[in-house]
Every structure is written in structure tokens, then in C-alpha cells.
Length: 141
Image (cartoon, rainbow, N blue to C red; front, side, top):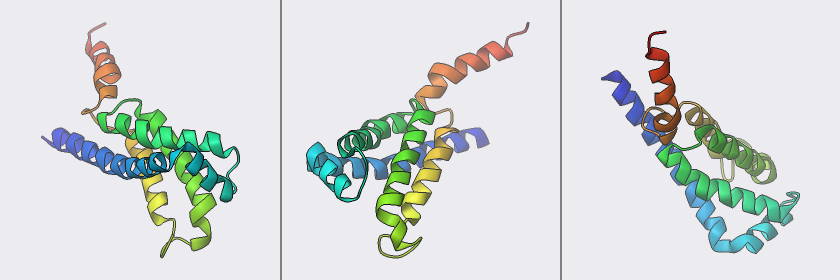
């Protein structure tokens, strides 16, 4: 019983984190690569076009993968990279809390990282990789 509750809460956590990243990715999509790259350039982010494509890919495609539980550790690392970029380029001067603070960016990065390396059994990663490994480990030698 507890394992099922744990897996459902992990799924809900993945959905919650992914929805926030997805919303930010869709904002970037609406601005287009050039618009997002222009903003990144003004913020001093190196290679703004590459950074824009990377951020949009992680936040849109990565979030979809995160929800269904595919390539969770890879997406989690992408979330951390995007979040560190946002924290250092936009939020750091505003402090931890308050208008434009980095508390949300910080929590999302760490929650994404934690969920990426422990996404639960309701995930494609578990279905494709871990359940097969568990069956092999349970077989007698």
C-alpha cells in the first residue's frame, strides 16, 4: 500500500515540476528562438541562440518526457543547467526572496533533480529499464 502511495506522489511531483518548466518553455516558444536569444543576449548569456534552443528543448520536450517518466536523470540535469543559468543571469541580484528572487528557481532545480533520480514505478524508465533489471535480480542463480 505504501509503495503505491509513494509512486503516485512521485508522479504528482514530476507533473508539478514539469508543468512549471513547460509553462516557461512555452513562453520562450511564443517569443521564438530569435526573441528568446535576444533576451538571453541582453542578460549576458554566452551563445544566446544555442542557449535559447537548449532551454526551449529542455523546458518543452524535457517536461513532456519528465511527466511520462522517460530519461528522468537526463531531464533532471537539464533542469538544473537551465535553472542555474536563470539564477545566475536573472535572479541572483534580487536575493532569495521577494520580487524576482531565486527561491522558485532554486526549489524547482532541486526538486527536479531529486525526482529525476527517483521517479518512482509509474514511469517509462521503470517500465523499460528497472523492471527488467529487478526481474533478473530476483531469478535464482
